[in-house]
Image 1: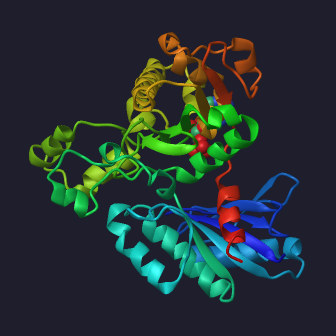
Image 2 (image 1 turned 90 degrees about the horizontal axis):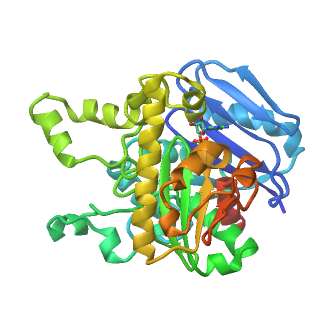
Length: 380
Ligand code: AMP
C-alpha cells in the first residue's frame, strides 16, 4: 500500500504523522508558531529534533514537512491524506471524502467553530496543492456524538434555534472513538457497559459511553462548555456574558479572547495553563486552580453517571489524564459512593487498571491519529 499522511491543522500549528506503508506509524511531528517565527519539530524515530524555519503559512509548512519526510517516504507516493476536522455538522456520523460538495458544507459550518474550522480547511487546501492526486478524507470531532438522545442534544431555547444548528455537538470524538476501540479489544465487558471517559488535556471534556456509543458529552455547542481547561472557562452562567457585554461594554471579540485564551487554569492561577507546572508550584493560586479543576471533574463524573444510569468503568486519557496521578486520584476522592476508588500503587505506577473499588478505573493513552489513519485507509 502507498503511504498515508494524517494532518491536524490548527491556528498556530500543523501536526502530522506519516504512515509509510499505510498501516504502520512512521515519522511525525509538527510545525509550531505558524505565521510567526515557525519551527519544525520532527521525530523520525530517534527522538524529537527542532529547527527554526521562518514565517510560513499552512501551505509553506506542508512543503517543509514534505521535505523532512522525503527520506522516510523513500520515493513512495502519498495516496491519501486524512484531516482532523473539528465540525462535521448535525448529521455526519463518520468520516467523509472531502469532495467539493462536502467541503462547501464544512465551510458553511465555520461560524459554529470559528477558531478551528477555517484552519482545518486551510490544512486541506494546503494538502490539495501539495498532493493533487491523493484522496483527501476528513475525520470529525463531532461525528462520534451524533447518536445522542434529543435531551442531550438540545438547549432549552425556542425550537427554531435547534433547527438552525444551535445544539450540543460534543467534541474530542476521535479520542473517544479510539478509547471505545481499546475497550472493545481489551475489556469487552466494559465496552458493553456504562463507561465515563475523561479526556483531560489543554482541552478537556468527558464522554458517557453506553455499549461503546456516546450518549452524553460535557462539551456542547462549542469547545468551551463543561470542564475548565488550560485557558478555556468550561461551564459558565450565560448571565455572566450578558453582564460583560451590557455593563462592561466588552465586544464579542474581547469576550471570545477572555473565554478561550485567558480563563481556565491560566485565569484562575494567574500563572500558567500547564497542569504540570501548577502541580510543581507552591503558589496558593496554583493550588486553588487545581482545586477548581478537580471539583468540576468530580461534579461532571457524577452528572455523567446519572446520564448513564450507573457506572461500570471510568477511563482517564489526554496529557493530564494519562500523566497526572494526582488529578486521577483527586478526581474520584469524593466519589466512593459511586464505587470509585483509586489503588494508590497502581496509580503511581501508571498501570492500565488503577481502580480499587467495584467500578473499574483505567488509564489509556489516546491516539487520535490512528483513528484518522484508519478513516483514510478505508477510502484509498
Ligand atoms: P494535551 O493537550 O493532551 O497534550 O495535554 C497537555 C496537558 O497535560 C498540560 O496541562 C500538561 O501540563 C499536562 N501534563 C503532561 N504531563 C504531565 C504530568 N506528568 N503531570 C501533570 N500534567 C501533565
